[in-house]
Length: 267
Image 1 (cartoon, rainbow, N blue to C red):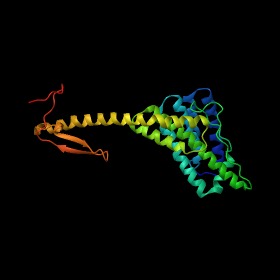
Image 2: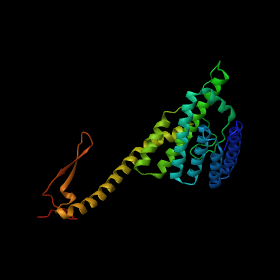
Image 3: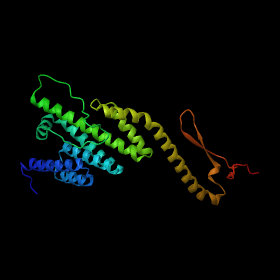
Image 4: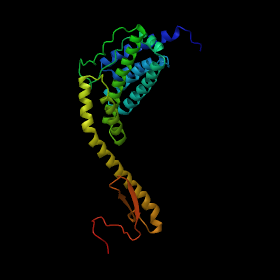
């Protein structure tokens, strides 16, 4: 299909109409319908408009959070962040083109979720004098990218924290660490970030220890099945932790005998 010069603008306009409909559905708590409408907007939006696509994906992540669909929220937020990375790169490499895109879509009316207090506003950018129109537009695009990045990170971090597990909790920690360096968070979000950075580490450690223990138990069962024909068991192998490095080494003890369940020693 041949795309005319005017078609991208028409497609973006149609995509924005779908987005507005989705925002209204979100405000009415019709989250499943909102997701469908956001996906329609995404399908229509020109594929090279990474910033606009990132906004839509971030909004989808917000819907999934409302529905407690945490895996889906993580996926959508990650897709949003990936698009923002490309948009940020394009803004640096081609500031003129990015500023033109900014003129086409000056306002973003995304849904808010409960992680942001009602009426909370992001801090305003510093006033810069004697800027050209292109410089103002380029700076606005950078501010917009940073704003959506903060939203997507907050949504992904929350979804990871809610879903739990060693990998997700570690990922949530990393997201909150990035957020802690950002200067455009609302006071409500800053409080959430500080709280999560205090409470997540012990949760992450406990999840790691639990999963390591479960994995070691499965490995022992598998190992015993393999070693049994040779008159050996995993009790012949001992994992010894190096307190200096935190690593482990394995020692073999041929005379080791399996210990009974009551912990007494066999003769």
